[in-house]
Image (tube, rainbow, N blue to C red):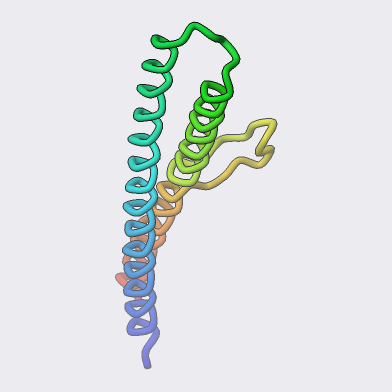
Length: 119
């Protein structure tokens, strides 16, 4: 095996990793959309429930509010998984999201192609 062939195989491996991350991003976005639709449904139920009753602290209303908050948190987690996050109090070193990982792999792919040209 020549060095050139070795790096060509590396490029193929990087391309497969890109496809894996693209699939992961697609599935994560699909799950987030399902959660968002559930969130919209819960907000609608809460609105209808609030219009029917004037009580501020009914158990049903509190349960709906908890579910809404849970949906918001789930969407935030999925957004961070896709887009990453900068340095924050919660994540001091930041989080690299799928989009950043895809960018890094594409950059690596180009570096490998440039290196092969030099061989």
